Length: 267
Image (cartoon, rainbow, N blue to C red; front, side, top):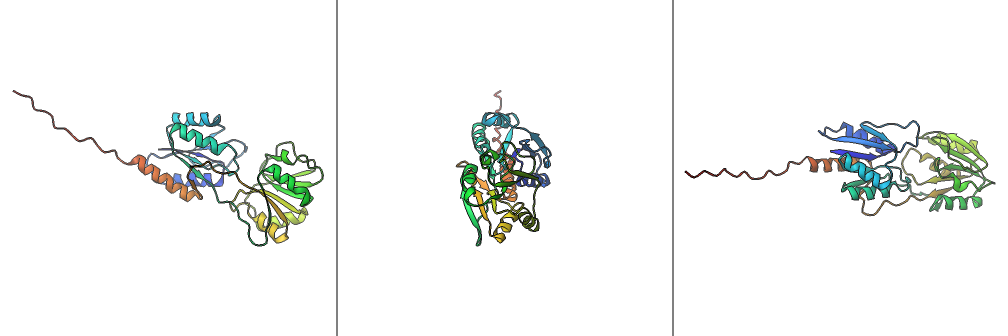
């Protein structure tokens, strides 16, 4: 059985590792990476890099490579990828599973302001502060480009795309981040507002704790929904168990047709 993982996340890599360790004869795993990061952390198994050409291209790839299960383990904010995966899986008649880490939830002491998009987040900032820690990734900074007064500290793995806000300092770094490091970063740069997407996970969560301790407002951009009807699991272990269940269905022996005794020839 061939499993295609739409990856690029920690969870996708962990799922590939779990499947590589499984003693399942004939299980083949390919992880697809978008190619937006120059030096990605490659998982075990087969790896392909680059887009498919939309839902039609993905459906064609699924058919041509005889994929038996598609796992969408992309980032919660991967945009249209989830909907392309749902369309492609339906067209190619391939079962689809979505692996999504749980989102964050506010706790006592948090001062959260929810936004439905980056544009909504940008609209909230003038009333909240003037020194912004922007942790929404390297894309989408155009939503903040018209804000001339605030100063932005933009953290991303690679250099952000332009246009950017006019007063921007870029910090290139990759998680996981520590609570002590996030506390020091907020103090050193005199941050008074944090902006983040609801990515979930532990790797970047310490910034929320540091902001809570400092009493800072946090603008949280809500994640887009998973396409309706797609089963969702929260952890790589759950996803690996689902893969095992589908594999068992593929590996189950088909019922043999009853044998018919040969007819005797008449003399």
